[in-house]
Length: 485
Ligand code: CS2
Image (cartoon, rainbow, N blue to C red; front, side):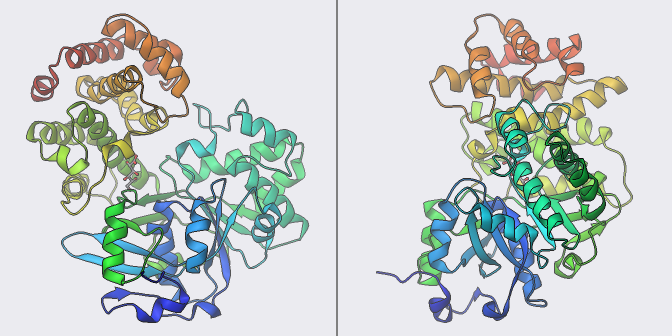
């Protein structure tokens, strides 16, 4: 039997596996992270691990909103896990940044204590798009049951926003220092939306004084995060065990490329993010817009179109010349013209780099991983571009193909009896079962208000283009449709 990765076995790691070169026992916790899934552990935690080599104050307290999985896997490993970077060269690095793991509902007092502690200067979040509980207009969704609950019983929060508000209430009561709260999810203006949601909940709880204090003492910078991070699978666990000679219950993997751009308005006392490779900028907008509307939009397009064509991974889908050409035209001819030009970003080179990253043969990034939560992702990835194109009078035919593919995917999954992973799964399943031709199906989706912004739902041009694409898909003419679009 192989031993397990832990503090005790660190010294037995073979050469070629990077490990913390700092004294972990001398580190303290200065960062609270909500949602320590694979993306956090592959991305922000790697930056903070680098920072710990310079400054021992920035260990992470990882807080899982519900699921004990990460705590149960990593606590026996003293919080250590392996990050594998997959490219021409495969890199192995043991990350030591996580100093504590809490499961929020099990130990709420400890979570509040961390959020209120004067040593805590930064809170980061990766809770996915749906984790913010926002309505279609980007404001906090007071009709969501978790938010209703957090409004009524603030001391036992159900949502990430609820945890933050209650933690900040206690921080204020203790008279603690200012704080920076950094959203790291794929939402435009993520920090601004989170800040507005936090203030709205504090006010709705009747605590206007708290809201006023938060507005003064807490910064919510926006940020753009990027690194392709396929879910952990058995192949990765075996690769890690073979290289380390140790078992790691939950390694993570990503491409070598990583980027983190943060709006430069952290409160004094926050960690020196620039020292560990984060780009600080006055205006993060062009970066997040380009990333969401190019990289993430292309991902979602590949996920639905590729799934209909029977592909399993992004690289496989990109190896289909007709599909790869379609995606490139979509990005260069439809998305790029809708983006605000920025002196900091060469869009053409950015697109070339994205397409290269998608072709990375060392990575098996499953389309099914990207296909989840379409109702939450498409509005920020594709609908925003479609709205812009409609407003500018540019054609939208090509942009409607991934939307039609999503509808076809929802219909196909529902009819096959598969469980659709989407917070709107119940509504979508009803729409998918409704009888009728392509135009009727599209009309049903648009009328439901589920994922479509009102200006798009009301556009006859959008309805006609999407219905025409869906009819093509239903008739088995997907390849021809891609070729001619
Ligand atoms: C992907 C993203 O799963 C998805 O929806 O588009 O997770 C993507 O891999 C990352 O945003 C890349 O930075």
